[in-house]
Image (cartoon, rainbow, N blue to C red; front, side, top):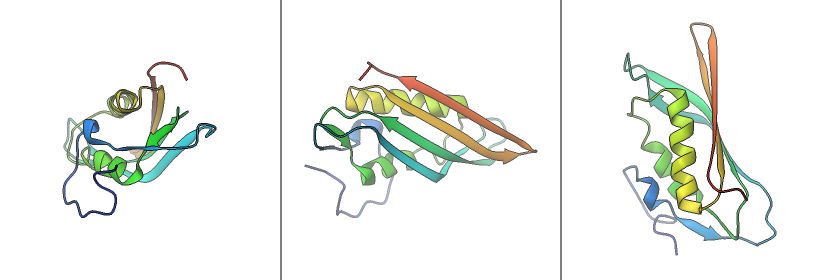
Length: 125
């Protein structure tokens, strides 16, 4: 049962509230990607925009996309470096799934620099 799918929701949620759905046991890699992930610089408070990719191999369960979007929304006003974003999301979602989760965050260029950070957290598939 999902708590968020098909229901109106007007606020972000914690990682512990991300729903999972049953998927076919032969499902291979699952990848969620967005070009619209937002957080703020922990020093300046200015907005940072990222391309974010989340990958994992399900074990009969996957993340439900609406609740995942609500969880990712929780970062919009948080001051975190890209490296912390990748590690936090990987750790949180690995805890939800009980599987290894890889996260890649690519910050849109600022001052001519592009920053890419990735993290792999959790028990192997």
